[in-house]
Length: 327
Image (cartoon, rainbow, N blue to C red; front, side, top):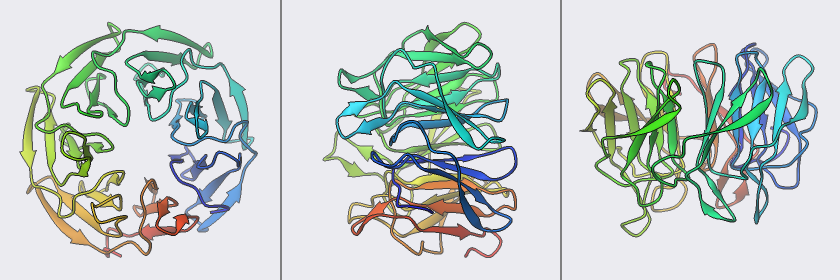
C-alpha cells in the first residue's frame, strides 16, 4: 500500500476493486486495489484521518465512512462518502453521537444501522440509522446492552444479530420493520474483538476474541448461532487462540482465519473452518505477523490480506491467499 495502516477498512467496490481508507491519525490518504493488475492507486484524500471507523458500500455503489478515532483521545461523529466514479470523498451529515469501534450494517431497505462503540462518555448502547435517500441520520431504539468491539451480522430474514462486547455473553436482534431490539439467546462465552461470519446455511459462526472475565486472554473457542431455533451450539475450537483477527468466507463455503493476537504475541498463522464437519485445519502462514489488519475476498476467489501492526510497528505490505492452492 502507499503507507502503513492499522485499524483501517477494506471495502469491495461494485467494480471488483477494493477501497482502502483510514489507518492513521495524521494521514488522510486513501487508495484502490485492482486485482486485475495487482496494483494500488491513490484516490482523493479523505477529509479526516481516522482509525477504528466503519466503511459500508451503499446500494448506489458509494461507500459510507463513519466515526472512528481522529486522534488518540477523540472519538469522531463525522461521516464521509466515497464516490467510486470520481474517486473522491465528500463530507456527509454527522452522526448524532461520536463513536469508535462500533458497527455499521447495510439493511435491506438501503439504510445503514450503526450500533454501539465507545466515546469519551464511555461504552454506548445507542444506535442510529443513515438514510442515503435523504442524507440524514435518525435515532432508533437503543440496544439492551452497551457494547464496543462487538459484531453485527445481517441475517437472511433481514434482521441483524449483534453479539458480545467486553464482559458480555449476550446477543440481541434488531428488526428493521419495527425498529426494535429483542434479546437472542446468550453465547456460551463472553467475548469481544471476535469475528462473526454468515455461513451459506444461514447460521452465524463466531470465533475467538478476548475473554475479559479471564485475564483478557485470547480465545480458541468458536460457536454457531442458528436463527431458526435461536440457539447457540459449540463447534470445533480454533487451533490457535486469537483476537483482533480476520475471518473471510470463501467461495467453497469454508472460512479463512488470519493473524491476530495469539497470547504469545502477534500471530502469522492461518486456519480454515469447514462448516460441513465443524472442524479446523491449518493452512499456509502469512508472510508477516499481523493484527488490526484487513482481509477481503476478491472476484477471482483469492483473499487480499493487507496492513496491520506487529512488533515492528505498522505495516504497509499486502499479500494474497489462493484457496485453490492454499498458498
